[in-house]
Image 1: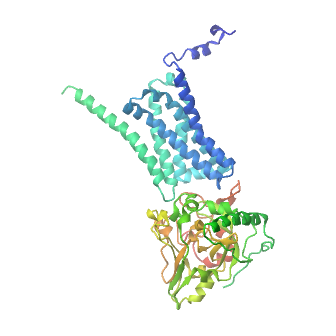
Image 2: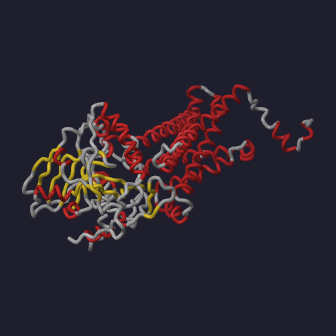
Length: 225
Length: 302
């Protein structure tokens, strides 16, 4: 039998690293459910493609993975406002997973483009990224997401301290670039991108409003000079 | 005008297996429609040396993946929403700079000698299909109305009936949909008015009961469900050019050398194929139509 002491020290450190987060059974179950729910759109896409129901499967995969990247991004950004408005603090526990799923779908989206759509025609890909503004901003969004995904672990959270929060504010830029990417690729009917833009505006607007209010309160609280 | 035929061998006389199988499946669908009171007679059409011998796209591809904004902007919308459109009675008014303006009933139009024309269709979005249309040269119709010396262009208009075309309830485009050709383009033997595909009348989502097919231009030039054709002296206004003049020109010839401002037109995905293929100038019809544009700068007149 392996006792705790026989574990190498880093593993022991990991095992006891989270005293502040006892993984309660209902929470673990909820996390598992959210995990599966986040995979459902991908399974649906695979099912439709494998059954030959998509006339233009590569376009369909591209669209679907792109759409769900935006959905998970907005869901990630909805966590903080919902916590504040609904006083629903447990949501915080799902934010990392949602963010990582946004990155996962974005990676699938990009892989579809590079592999299935362009078939590693790097010349065409580089030209696309440089010349087509909607691809430029999409690629920029993916690049900016990458360090956020890499530093999403507890280890990086500790190591970066206050800078972790600063770095992860990049998600605002990522979301703006992502919605712009969608907006610019649409031929004429902008209803769909408009919905994403409206939700994003609301989510970022709430933050700005709270920040402005906090600043005002602080200012009022100061003694007059 | 000297019209060259394609140098390759005309399509085989044998019906490809895919066509045969698709006809069967289509007839099954048609049988279902007849139960609901519709009658669908198969169209008699002779084969044409202007057809391509490339493998056809399936009826399902052709009828479930459509751009027809009158029924919605998603490619699945036309198949879902076009059922409400009533295509009888139907007539096409042909007027403008012609000696004998008149209205053609759809029954008359169906009496023109019909041909099967298997054409490539290249969408401006970067995908393509091979479609066995049934139709007749637009030139045969125009001859009957006798264009005058003033006529330089042909303007086309789609039906506007928002109650049956739900996409028209929103101003995505400036309805009715309008398209246009130069008179010599309109008279070119490749230019047809199509009334059917895969041997049967056009499904609504493909532009029933009568549509234009101009195979060397991007698909949006091939206007659907036509109710009016007008010969004009001035170059007519066209819907996509009105919507985004820097992206869609009047000519809109398929041209791999002139990119859409937002995406490349150098290659295309043939529906059903994995690898992209290179897009050909004039969608592979250069031999027959390049002469129409001699001396023109097609980068400017895109």
